[in-house]
Each structure stands twice: as structure tokens, then as C-alpha cells.
Figure 1 (cartoon, rainbow, N blue to C red):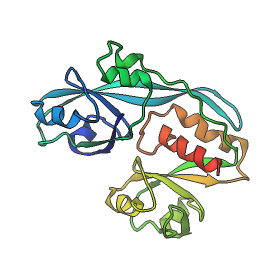
Figure 2 (cartoon, helix red, strand yellow; figure 1 turned 180 degrees about the vertical axis):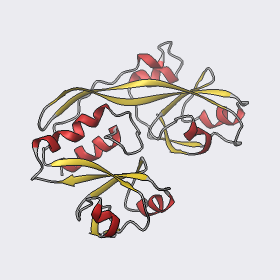
Figure 3 (cartoon, rainbow, N blue to C red; figure 1 turned 30 degrees about the horizontal axis):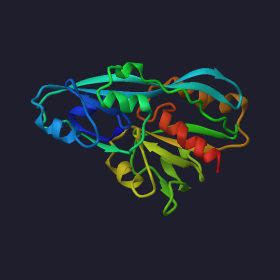
Length: 239
């Protein structure tokens, strides 16, 4: 599949998000092998059709969440306002058969493509919290080679950030140990940081909070629990 792995400029203004799958440019189904040729040859303005995975919550209980994943169609019209689309794509070579058929000229519309897996149950001790950074320096340091907080002071301490909290997204961008600092430094205040918190003493209401946020749209700039954050939490819980 062709997944967007970076968004900036006009693409960001149009609402294109990291993780969206590019399936058509104008009326042409594209593949990992030809998408760049069609993209470069298209005259502005032109249309791009993308698929976006979202999670719909069906039921919420104290320590589990059941939901459906589905793909929705997103369309964007790119002009030459800034000379480029502002996005880049990477392909992981995976995808369901229906999606592959749509790229190969199958008459099924992308809107018919659906996923049905359900997220695994999670231990209730894990939670996801979002803090808003309003000032820099923030007073938070992270252990080398990780995204785990090792020291807090100042604004971070006042915001409730704690040693051991694990950063999963900054300003809506999923982060890793090698890039979190660059993303943090480039983000303009105010911006959200989302953490995984290991909190065995959390109340039942607190345990539920991150599941209730599953209604938030995918890529909601770190506010609420996007599908990517849910996957990170699931992986953490299975360690």
C-alpha cells in the first residue's frame, strides 16, 4: 500500500494525515511502482483519493474496548499555491486483497473496502494522557535511546508529567527515540504531547478515559487516542 509518511504545506492545510493511503491520482488507480510518475505529470489543480483508517467504538467496559476498523475515502484537490503537494509517501508492501484489486483496476470503489479486526483487550493499568505544552523550556528530560521521561521539573511537573511516562506522539506526530527531540523543538506552542502511563492505582473512571477517546478522529493531533496511539498502547500492554 502507499501510506503517507510526512505531511506539510498545502497537504497539511487540506487535512491530509500521516497514515492515509493514496489510491488514485485524478481518475487513475496508482501503485507503489507508478505513483510518483503520475504525481509529477499531473497538472495543478488535480485530485488525489486517499483511504483513512478510523476506529469506531461499539462498547466500553472497565478494561476492554471492542471496535471496528474501517476505511473511509478522503479526497483532496491540490493546487500549485506552494509549488508542491507537501506530502510524501512510503509503501509497506502490505494491504488487504480488496485494496490490491482496486489498484489493479477492479471496479469496486474504495468506499467498499473495509476492515473488521477488533483490538485486543488491554490490561486496565495502562492509560493514555495528553498534556499541552505552553512554554519552552518545558522541564522534561528523556532517557537516552528511549522515549521514557527520566526527569521532570518546572512546567512539566506542574502539568502532571511523571518519571516513567512514555511519549508516543508530539503535536500529532508519532515519535521514536531518534526523532522525538527534533519534533519537540520544532513544534510551536501550544502543542499536545500524548503519553502512555503505567498507573496501577488509577480509578475505574481513569481506566476508562482513553477508551472513551476512541471516538476522536484518526490523527487528531495528539488530542484523544488515535488508531496509531491505540496500537502503541496495545504493544506496550503485551510486553
